[in-house]
Image 1 (spheres, one colour):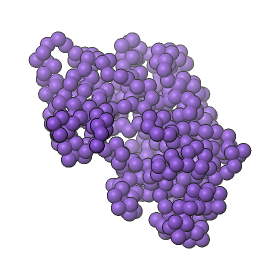
Image 2 (cartoon, rainbow, N blue to C red):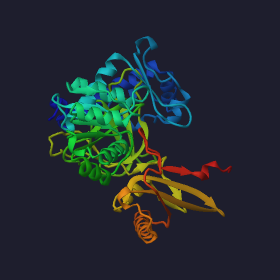
Image 3 (cartoon, one colour):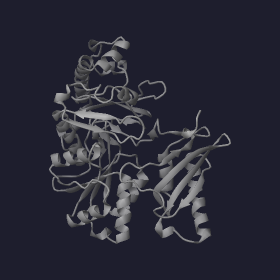
Image 4 (spheres, rainbow, N blue to C red):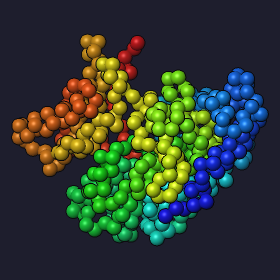
Length: 434
């Protein structure tokens, strides 16, 4: 089902005409209402009249996390605080959190974007959906909640932290859909299997986001829970969940280009890249009132495809994320992303998706240890069986990342299972003084 066919199925000419008009409008707004942006534009010798459409996008300055940090908390707001109705913030563990502020109109727009995403995943007003994201400053809970209500679905606001209660409500209320992080959904699947309750659930659909995940993880979720799983994308500083979502064809995440202007840049040279080329995703808010960001560098590495999808939608599709430019590990000169490790582990029978990469420096040489949790049905006291499993993991990892990694098998539930965003890297090198 297409929620807003008038917008989601526009021709490319219609999309670009609308984007150009909205870009001109938002640039004028931030120039006159946000001192921070006015100074950045003036430093580049720019005035609003210099931006006449999409062809001038590359003239504009980028916005980065460092800019958000300097302007924290409301220095990038484009309206008076009296016009703002909501604050959200990232769950970042270093520095100041990334802030997002919203007007009443922003909240309504956000809800509509999330409703589009849920429809893209096949969810309708006839569904009963559990929201398994955290509520509060994190955008996931309230963002998914408002979007589901806007769609007309029956919402169960579960949040995180009580998986037993979530399972009870899932069964008792006959929930047909769930929105949560992919790692938490696998945790739910594990508990359902332990309790022997898989056959008692009515789930058909999961919409997962807030952390990167792989096709292999999708396959595992779908097989274990007998559902269809969809990827949703968003950023606190842009709006939260609802920026993009994939459809039943899984050919990329449809980004709502009437609200979010995407581009791909080379993260080293900062030059714009053509469609289909890999690089860093950059997003400009086209309709946000409270805190529109201009050319925000997401740090997410991907590409954009612009051909019409089989589902009928015409807007650009964000391709599978290859990692983050700031999450990339350089180990002995090799670029390594956690997503590569995850994809490799999911192909090894006898392991779970729970893992931890520990990077260290010993005798001036980088080392990598990958701690892998063993599945309960594969855990045994037989040394030969565990050695065989360890060897299989080692071989898969070497093939995937091109490095010899030390493999440490961990007993079931021996690693932390996260309700929210999962953490997979401990880089001890960062603790050393340079």
